[in-house]
Length: 63
Image (cartoon, rainbow, N blue to C red; front, side, top):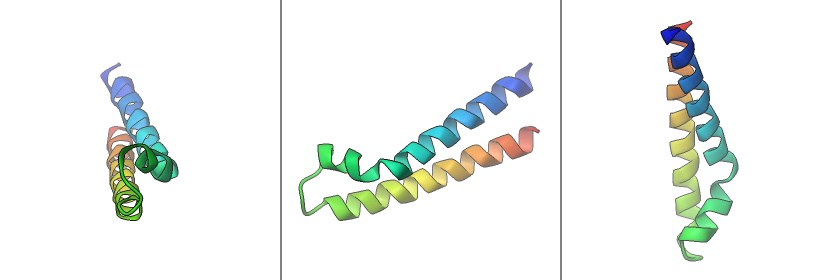
């Protein structure tokens, strides 16, 4: 049961990471000015990629 909960948490972490990668430009339009959008978008994509890897590793090691 604990393993299934851990895998579910890993799947949710991967989902958040993929959403951050896909919607980085939309998210930065809301929070940053025009000059900062490119840097912030790149930063969010990198952060989303790292979060996706962490979630994938959680799933991999709990299986």
